[in-house]
Every structure is written in structure tokens, then in C-alpha cells.
Image (cartoon, rainbow, N blue to C red):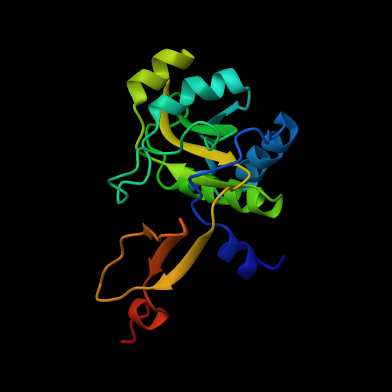
Length: 190
């Protein structure tokens, strides 16, 4: 798959076939993509927690918040929840600032997941104190992002932004629509 198609297929999926597990080896391969990605000042201060055991996934899920624009939806129900998570941490003993490294790492892992036939969602709305306590995450690590992953159970399509409305939505067939601004709106010619 070329990079254009990979990016187009890499959407924020929020519903999964929960019983389709992702084995640890594949998740380690995704973390390796993050390891090989760019890092500000080459500090390499990110650490990763891999979660793919169903009982541990049940511990992580309540610490996540889903799809803020879908006010009538509380997130994926039983049978549609992620079958794996990669939690991205910043190691404060290496650096006090992580810049955009966690975004770069997340995108690298999600592109790799897409290539493998999986999908995911970058979650920044996290109940960090709860997650830290539930997983016994030492205080030296700052919780930065959670990548929720699994085999996508929903269809996500890209629409053009209409009248400035960038809010994603679901239609009557439960297809998830994501408005994107036009290329002409993004490029500034000076």
C-alpha cells in the first residue's frame, strides 16, 4: 500500500471487533516503528505500555473518553471495545518536555497498524490519576496518550467541510463522517 492510501485508510476508529485479539509480537513491532521515528534532540524519552490481555483491557477502558462531538454516545459498548492499547509515557528522568514526540510516535504506530489491517484511535482525554493507580504506573512517567487498537468494526468516510462545520458525525447507517477542509483552504500563497 503506498503512503497516500495508507494515510487515507488510517482513520480514527472508535468501534472494534473486540474478540479479534492483536498478539503482543505485532504490538511490539508497532512500538519499534515509534522507536525508529524522529525524536526532538534525539532524547528518545518515550516509554510504552503494551496492553492486549482482555482483563487488562477492561482496566484501561474506563480511563478513556471517546468522541466528544458525539454527545449522545458514551463510547464503544461491550463487544466493540479495543482489543489492545499502547500507552505512551514520557520519562521525566530523561526529559522534562516531550514536545511533539508522542504525536509522531502515535502516527507511526497507527500507520503500521493500518498496514497490518488494524485500526486505532489516539486518545488524549484520559483519566490519568485513575490509570496511574489502576496500572501502578510510577510517578517518574508522565501519561501522554493512549492508542486504542483493534480490527475496525465501523466505516469512516471523509467529507468536505461545509459552511465551516468540522464536527464529525454518524449517519442513519452508523457510518462515521469526518469533514476535512479543502486543500485550497490550507495552503497560503504569499
